[in-house]
Length: 56
Picture 1 (cartoon, one colour):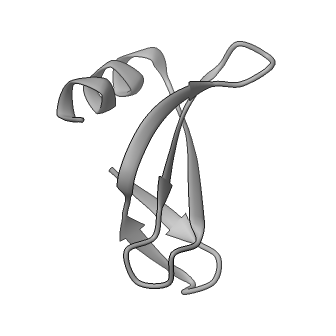
Picture 2: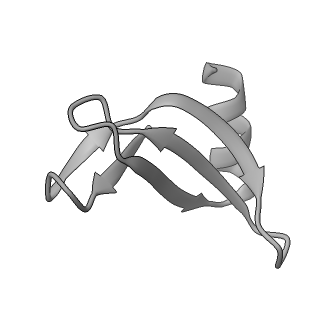
């Protein structure tokens, strides 16, 4: 799954993806930028979260 890296200023494929649930109950995926090591975060819907879980 891709997310925007603020440090690189580009969309990057996440490494070490994991599904998380935010305080408000929405699903998200956290990961690490493969180039600079910055933490990446992307909010996703229920279908996307299930897909990320399946891919991991």
